[in-house]
Amino acid sequence: MAKLIDSASDPAIPTLAAVLDAKELLRQLTMCEFPRRRWDLSEGAHVTVLKWKKGSRCTFEIALKHASGWDEVIGKVYAEDRSDVYQTMKELWHAGFSSEDEFGIPRPIAFLAPLRLLLYEKVPGTRARTLIVGPDGTERVMAVERCARWLARFQAEAPRRGPIFREQAYLNGLEVWSPHSADVESPLSYKAKHLREQLNVMAQRVECAEMCAGHGMFTCGQVLLAEGRTVTIDWDTFNLTDPSHDVARFLVDLQRTAWKYSRSLNTLDQAAEVFLNTYVAAGGSYDAHSLAFYRAAICLERAKSDVTQQSPGWGPRAEMMLDEGLDLFRRSTGGRLPS
Image (cartoon, rainbow, N blue to C red; front, top):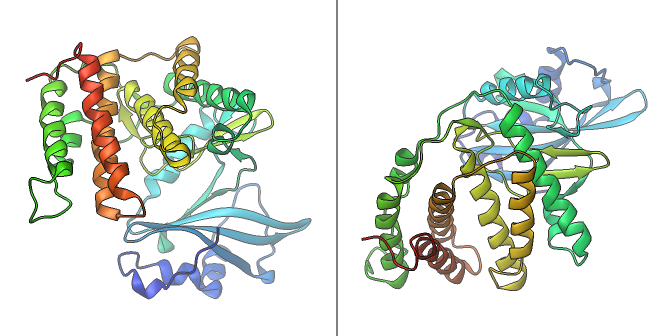
């Protein structure tokens, strides 16, 4: 869905106004060479804002004229220089994740440094989430199977580069919080504090797995399904990580998706089981304790996000996440929380 934004309201992205200025955008485009593309820039560019994360990045759809019609590409402008995202995408593309491969990423086109603007192909296809929440059980199974096979292939074959994801640094970013500073003993605050304490204990038992390439935010909303091709988008959070981390991300997102559409965490349990079984069958591996740790930590992270953003329904959703995080520990420790 297109969004209207006022670039002046986001000074943290200093080049946003230039990207929204069609003349300046075209001027920058004329100064660059784009592989495999010949656009007629005299026809102008049509820019539609798709998603805006204030203070961080803004994603656009950019339509440019070429010989046979209009070509739509995706542009993403950042608050900081993220040429590293472009370099990572190029390495992945050449490592067997191109448009000719069954498991791929969008083709990286260019990074316009003066605008802090990343350009990549707009991939046709259906979001995996659309099929997962749909009424057709066969399509749901197919969607989660393709997501699982993509992840297993990625972890096995992708170049290992990027910042290392470290458990303790991650936990340090999940300091105890309170939805109401004056009410430090509220139910949400108490559960968040308790879960954070248990995470510290559980982190000591996490196995040191061999690091692999990580997406960082791998969910069914990041996977596009096209005929003969499965494509994962949004590479801002790429890293080196324990393979259990991206698996946990996907499973927690399935639960949040189930809650959004049915107000139950369990609606997509069968889909989660299919995902894990397919992932293992495709060569993926995870440590059960590490998976429980990452899932619980992500539950705390998502609850914190719910409290911070306070979008409709944030209270029950945050409490649901905290309860699930604590329950994960009960299940992983045979019915008792570690003390």
